[in-house]
Length: 285
Figure (spheres, rainbow, N blue to C red):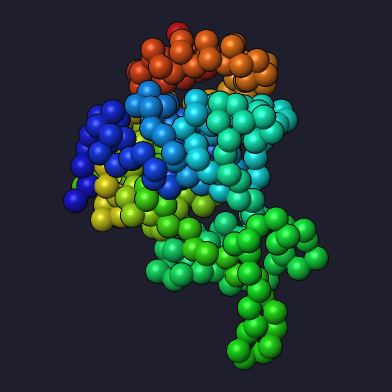
């Protein structure tokens, strides 16, 4: 049964030290507010999973929350590298993290396999690449029907997945519009799922039948957090704050400046700050 909870409670009930957790978003609908609440609660030894780790993973890694990172691209989209992640990987600050790198195709297939209850994903890929030489979780199998050599990777089943979406109805179903990347499959693959939304409505009326609706039985908790995706964007609500992504490169470049920014903008802030930032972004503050 889906619970409607304050974000603090939704995170505390569903995320635990040592969990494998996905905060999924593909440039659009990144669950920033949920990640910031996890940072405030100080979780440790997490395995962070995501196709495209960006600012929130840089922040969590820089705050010493990660034990391992499973990913298929890592960077500040449109700007460059993730400086806190690089500092951790190369210099062990604030701690050393293990990395498991894949292609996008591998992670998509791994999420889908978990959603289907399968132990692994089998697909064409990785032939002629060097990733199998550094990732022991990439294996080769022979198709029993054709003899073709195929790649196999373990299915990805997070303990909990966090996503952001536009709307929930009062029954606890969630509507996702626009580019969704792998969020749907990441929710279906997870043992638990938490969704932050812009608003709750009575029902999803007069909408295109091909929109993505996650039924309430797939979701553990819903939190209403207007602006909860900022600085990424939420289709139909607010645009991408490109300046914030550019500014992050300078903030993250220095350890002391990073720590000060996190203290002021995350640790001492709360979910309400997201609505305030989006209001400013819209130019109506």
